[in-house]
Amino acid sequence: MGTKYEFLKERFSHWLGENGGGAVVAVSPENVLHTSGAYIASQRMIRDRLAMTIYPAEGEAAFLVGDVVHRTAKADSWIEDTRAYAEHHQTPMEGLAEILRENGLARSRIALETRYLPAESYLELVRELPDAVFFDAEEILDETRMIKSADEIDLMRRNAIAAEKAIEYGYLFSRPGDTERQVVARMRRALLELGGEWNPFITLAAGTANTLEGHHVAGDKPILPGEILRVDMVGFWRGYYTDFARMAVVEEPSKAQRELYHPVVHVQRHVMEAARPGVRACDLYQACADYSQQIGMSLDVNLIGHSLGIGLHEYPVLGPTYEKPLAANMTLCIEIASRVPDLGMFHVEDLILVTQDGYE
Image (spheres, helix red, strand yellow):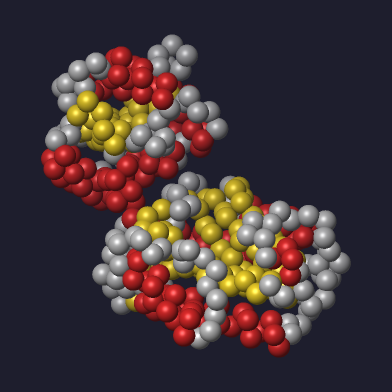
């Protein structure tokens, strides 16, 4: 059993004790990976091929998957009790109910991942276990994903380097007259060649009008000398996301473009320096807003970043209302943007690791 398994067992058991619960059940592709260590790729595409982990308050966890992916789950997971339901003969909820009964939890309070579980499946589970009470497990699942393990940090570090190289490749090999769509194609191709599985999202814009759109869809507009380019690209590697925003100029930047870009970077660095354990997310946001005002830069976002990992937007969210303090081994995207009507949107986003001594 891995150290993350022991961490999850302890945290879930403690939380269930506080809330009078008998088990935590994770269902989504993100939280199944988080709680099992196994990435079940087809779970994202085939919605009724549910996979689930079951962490009882006492005893060992169980991992339930469809028989098609049982071999993969058993090979990749740290959960020893990995079992399969026969797809199209037994439903996932019948398999889940069987495990809960085995653990003596048919009349217990069961914490479910309600944000993902389909209503049809929930109603079936209620029919299978009419004496059980079900409540929301999202709080503890979100909390345990905030702190990354050493293995997760190593993987995300490698992914981040590859994602940035893919963006750099797209810019370096583009020339005046190429279209936005062609630049995007280069970045996507590079991301796949560097080991990425897919590119869930990319917005690339050229010129003032297009960069002012938050999520511009790259089209056939040619990139022209003197124009700014802005890209925000999400990559995906074995269940983990990357998220970077990068600016470029076709040929040489103007004095005005430099003067608008540099404050955005300075504000981002200011936020990074302030991102230390114990600092509340809302206070980090306020420090960013105050510093932006101090240097005369208009801050264009209602949050300045978010945690990143198995989910694209994880907690903590770096906004004005989120009071959770930062902690070592959180991985945060720090994202700063400023709109200038006559010149476009200037935008940067980087991934940092929060450490006891500052940031990486």
